[in-house]
Length: 278
Image (cartoon, rainbow, N blue to C red):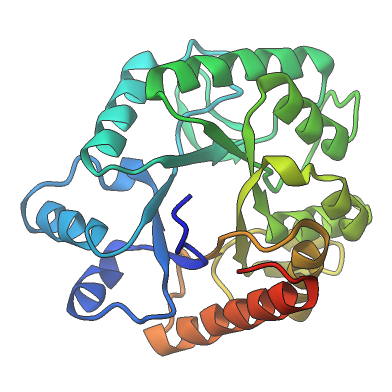
């Protein structure tokens, strides 16, 4: 991770022109889905290349489908590597899920929480690392059913991280969403995550469908319980680069900057109280 990557923003195409003109100082890094950018040429490609020169970039994939029973798409992984290499991007993360079978489902489906799945996913992660020549960063995901589960989500996530010996993209909002939907203690889950494997964090908003059903949308402001969980995360694990996700209902940049500034304040407070440098 870049030493100056403290608080970042997920970059959408509609933001590109605004940030070409001016990048606010409070945005230390950007994150993109490589699938959405690696085929772009022309003005989009030129602007993206120029922006990469001005801020560190992380890549967060959408379609690797690390848990799929279909063979690993090696050619796709090679294209990802070409994109990462060409822009000198070192951080690549993906979801602990699958999104393909007989075809691409364009959704993130839960992997069965089993020992067999742990070994299977870990082997695929190691193959991806060999091709990318980079450490793999795995994100804990939101899920709405757990078919065939033989262990808890917490046990499954930590087991995959250990078996694959990979790093963790810890999504704070996903912890909260899952804790409501599946009735577990969000703070206990957070504390059980291995500090030494954390690479960076995600935080986002969600939609409340019902009191016991939250939908992970990245389309709303972050609510107070998720902010409190982020503060708890910094207190327990230390300060890590933190990415604000906002994928639709995107407000004016000034509104996004208010949330980014709040993350900075939490990081500064945590660093001060612990003696760490943010």
